[in-house]
Length: 204
Image 1: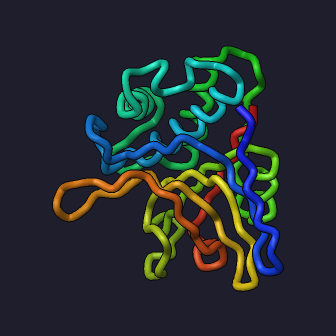
Image 2: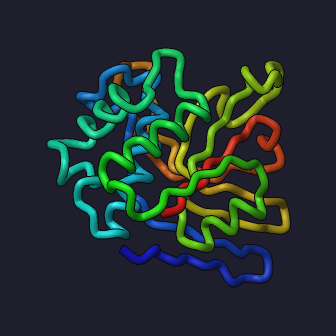
């Protein structure tokens, strides 16, 4: 499936955004929802590749009865933990899932980084990026960041006169009344969150 290109050509904003099917970790049927952001991110990225490569075994609604079952499958078999998913666990889990689904072809290349130019290059190449926020294990306990500990899906970027911005899908949220909000698109300032971010590239 071809990536959707959305460019902003004014004098103040340039950017690009990919079109991904959103996954919501708090959706009905998701087990261990509070720690399912890593598997939800994994599901969204692997479904993107499934559509791009024409492989229905990576697409939630075609392989599973629901997106919730897709998330549960990844959580149960590929690294979900009650305390969340480490970057190493994410890389190990997504590679194992892709290998189980696709075999030895195509080659699966993963790498971890934290650099806006490299993130931009991945988006420009049509590859969504897993973006983890973690102030606890990065030892930035007292900072004010977009998230304290959370996996999201990097789908795009903007470069404006005011700074550099990541466009992410946030995997949804739980409301105080027990209801949930579906995954939505957010713009996150890169500079203000850089010190707690880990980015994971997936290239097939």
